[in-house]
Image (cartoon, rainbow, N blue to C red; front, side):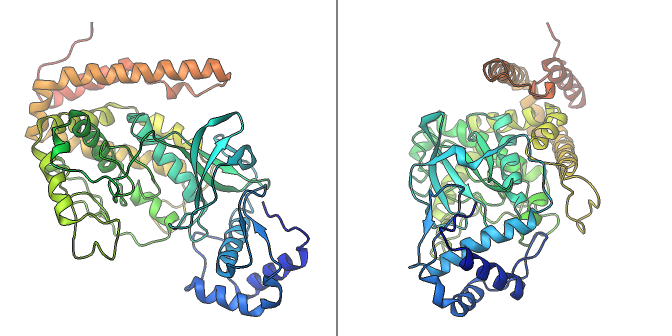
Length: 447
């Protein structure tokens, strides 16, 4: 993890100083109020050796921070030391974790966001590029696991709207980051904003209906212009499942922020009861110069036209239907492969529960809340009467295709995936029967 190149003394001084000033602690957050102040203090105290320091983050020297960037050196050192302490009791890695030294760098790291990122490829497949996102020491290491879980939930319901994702560990079995496969021709809404002309493109409308509805279902807090394209393709999921993930992100969360409501579902993508930091219809031109990824008022007005688009409404309800018909057990098993029996932090109402069980319970509750609202919503009842069977047929075909793909992967890679990863089509159809009865519409009968 740490390449010292004959700088053992330097490393020891950094480590000792960090321990003495109490920068690093076990837990979700550390007791540092001003990173730059501490970094400058550290620089001043050991200025005699910073000129000789060379540190690499990954297990082999792909990325080097040199002596002309002392603040970056300290931030990256802090990243490493903080992870070692926070993760010192982890001995068994999640099933989905892979060694980071199997990745090869295609570019240098960029530092224009809170998470340094670079393009990488895998040894066995040099032609396919992935974005490697380095864990941020400001946040719990488990946020990387949570992001991988959230992304996998999106991908479970809409495989073409979220990237394949993987988490990676170093030689000390510490999770250091994740990869996401690049979308071909992906252009963010910041570089290619949605226009009124785009609303005449059925693929744009369909894609946005799926992407925005999934973001609503999975309680996304950070859907700014760089995290989605006009076809609804999504990236960056560390603030999805916000009521759970916020404790790992280390920032404030107000209870009830993501309450599900009939008004928001009916008017999607316009949301009022859900209070997100970034959302396409909540643009504010007065802050867009400060928050460069914020939507402008003009951009939001374009998105608001989707609320009355019939194709958008169909795919919105189809996506909601797919979620509430699905088996909660699969979400438990997806999450479990990215976790290692970790306990959810105390003080948040889940004392003593495993994170995987907290996630599963949360998904089950979210599903039940949305189901109850949909049953009582006239617009959804009309959807079930007019388009329910069409939607069900499409949903079962999509799940069957996913099952076939899983079986092909199981054979090709000789891996034993949990049987719950395969969707039980009969269960989906039975759930639809119960839902049909609940909305008092004609029953669907299996062949």
